[in-house]
Length: 49
Image 1 (cartoon, rainbow, N blue to C red):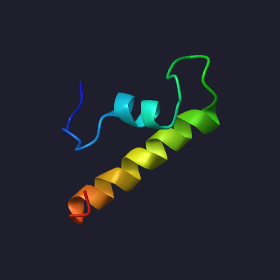
Image 2: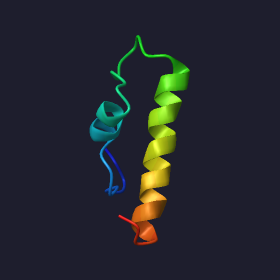
Image 3: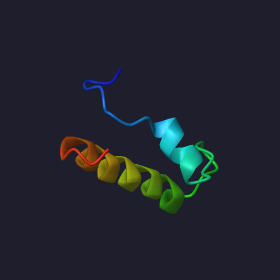
Image 4: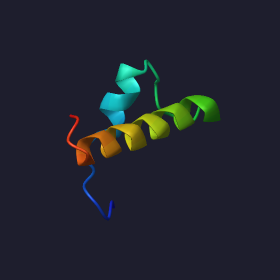
């Protein structure tokens, strides 16, 4: 269960990056999803989204 409600959705970010989340996905691909989530969260906080 998540502690916080983030302004971005992991599945939507993954689909934007054409990454299928799952055990067969590389660490690099999973990292790109996480990095994009952080970037979008900071953009949201700073009012850019």
